[in-house]
Image 1 (cartoon, each protein chain N blue to C red):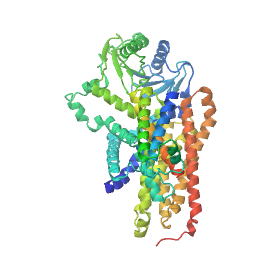
Image 2: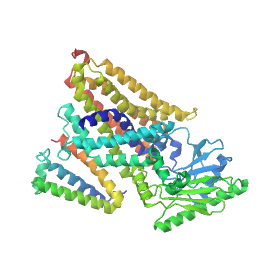
Image 3: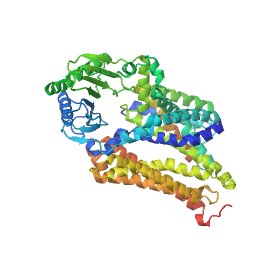
Image 4: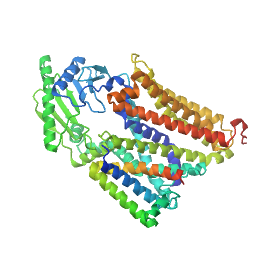
Length: 533
Length: 96
């Protein structure tokens, strides 16, 4: 078991760190969106309920933005996204996204940054690899490995309960690292299990598509209707004229209100729609889909999805998930963490960071417990794993900070701005991995002392990460007014990211100070350290 | 979630329960600061500390479930327990 835990952890750990780090950031993805896209921070008017008139204005504006489009999707405003998000599928099937402030009528494009929900989130569940679902399968492998690692970790940690609260920072490095690895694993063990298990369940239908289809005799449309309430009405071929289309759009607010009332009566509490999808607008079989994906006081996701004929208002399908699907919605909600409970989301971030610490200290323990042995036997393993650890963990954190800095520095008008931002992330990440390898091979001749390597390998990336976080924070203060402006406007979304960056800077300064003190106090300069032969 | 008196009490109970369980373990049962305080309120034996700690944990879970609803309350309890346990281990380690 120990052998399995050590070597499986070493090979899958890099994937797992990426998943945990990006997942932790994704808990506040909408807040990152607001921070990275200041034009969408508008908090004018009452947040966050659209009146029927405002909804009509938004729909007509969406139609005006793309008159030829037959598919309009709206994500209605919430406290975390105070503007209405319009997604329009153009006739050439490209997707255009805009934000509209229903109070002021201001329309802003949502395409100059991917933000948190367009970059951190897909990185978390598919490593931004879309080709042939490879990203999803890599995640599945990582998730299964994580479950196996958790179970094997419990088996090999014989004093799990007796040493539940034990951390000995003043013991030698290997002991302290193992304590920290055990502590971050054990105290958050229910979270690690829950988040891994629910993550695996979410993509069950991608990993085993035939299992779902078998229950519906291979009928994909029937399975989608039964599971998520998705109704695909084929177009009749009869084209409605422009006036009829406008009249249909104007009828939407009343239809939405009617469905909300029906839900509220069934539940005995206020229920609001949060997304609207109009398909085949120009056709007489146009459909209106009204969803309630994120209920206010519930962990579950996707509780309601009703579809009706747009031109007649006839209800085609009112989705009532079967109990097992209802349970899946609850599981999904537990993992997606989009519920209206800020304190719990902050605790999820803490859980995610404990996961990152668990993985990172696992690597460090592997390194420190083999340092002398590998040096004596002149094995390359230590140097390679150390470089990969620096690049794969701290390198990813540096790349994330660089992504935020690039977002603040790049002018809005440059072409493919969102892509340039992502290249900043990948460029910095690759550079940090290259630096880690160069540095590891440069210092590999040093004496077998932990601190001599700390000074060469861990201090510079820590300083760079801290400096980039501070720079991102500072640039936001200069560009948008930052903390003062956010507090004046009650904009808690960007305030949360500013506070997060400040905490990262504080912890970075603390860590860098500890590293530099331990390196200079106990050991001489690298040139004065003897070489091992 | 609004932090009200009941919720603050539930979090305090949770921390108190974790602290008592930590002080019932071999690594911390003779802690120079906290063990003395435990003794002064009558929780001298390992068994007494452990039992009181478990009761405090159960009470805090019940309180959170009552205040926040069963689902939110229990998830909140699990996550808060993880965070407080990590903080507690850190604090106890620094003052060992």
